[in-house]
Length: 311
Image 1 (cartoon, rainbow, N blue to C red):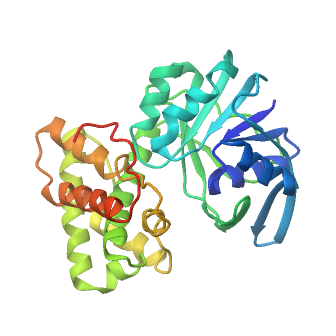
Image 2 (cartoon, rainbow, N blue to C red; image 1 turned 90 degrees about the vertical axis):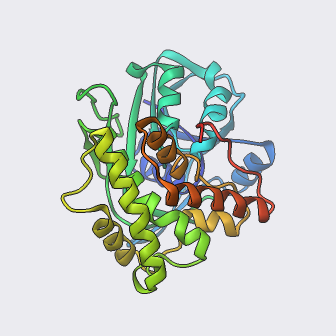
């Protein structure tokens, strides 16, 4: 079965390369004729991992192409998901299946509302990947992709062929898994963007650590109110451990700010603030972080990501 990948960022290119190496038919959907011409000049994706660099030839199309889509991997930035899905809606059939693999929360529900729960699988990845250059992906850390459905424990893993090397796991509690990833992102991403620091500095600069602890305390309160089981201990311990483990990394939010790209702050901290409002819980530190990152985007000349959630 052919895979169509919408979103040629790090995760999209990582999946494209691994599907091609596994002998699975796969193609990318690109957003503009210029981007398509850039891709066609190279003819594929480069994968850089522990075994070296491998060139993976594959094809790409524009969204307007009429060919039906059997399996769609939607891995655009979360704030682009609605527009991206609409761009290929004419290519989806009643038998099409969609795997949503994005940061933050909120976009998954929007896809389900548009396409129907039976057609949509939700994923959460811990693979570490980044683009060295357009269509050149570095697989920096091997993790896994948990896959499930929001309202059901019955979620058959998508067909990626017997030789697919990325680790997939069926997750009957995918919403909880997404909340756990959201918790870490809420603790680390906004602060690294605001302080302009690597992840590890959140553990070594006392003022940064105190700020992280305050964000975590508020998140814990919202999770308790929502009945979401996060971690065995307080969120701060898990967040500090992740920040220490990824000490030399620059968060994706900081990289977006530095490259004057919209961030996913609305789908991360914005989502949390909305959940807190619905639960009647005040989260002043997270609300401040949300407003400060919005201001940072504005000051850098970046067009803000769409505010799809009321805050």
